[in-house]
Length: 163
Image 1 (cartoon, rainbow, N blue to C red):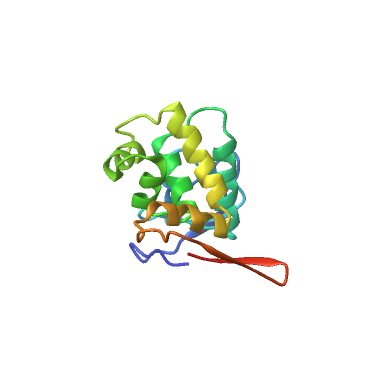
Image 2: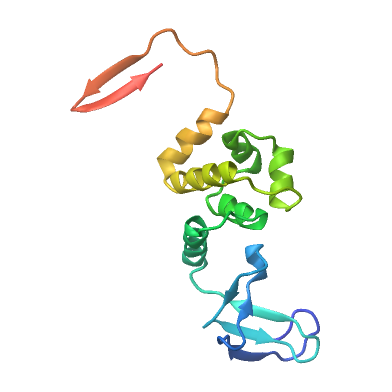
């Protein structure tokens, strides 16, 4: 493999516990990987990791973060929000805070309070499911004035609704 920065031949090795790969693309300063192929340029020092099954990796990182016993940091909050693909403005609305406040939290200019931490974890856990995610996000968007009646129809033992 040739270095994209300087054009030199890169050295390949497997990341080990004694020399793990710092996964900076996670956006978190504390995530390191072992067992992946790492390409290093001896000329300029550039380093690339070949990361297989990145979706599974991100799901595992999210699971670990949701289960950790201490409060989420701002960078962890940003990671789990992005992993479930919720826009910052929608997530802020779901949390009951302004987008500016969410930005300050994610950039660690403000601390995540215990209440906000629990709510964010719950929202992310629920948002992992497609239909529930859409229901949650729909609740944050401006809607037309609701109809005065709702018509619900039973079709083949399945309810359908129209407002």
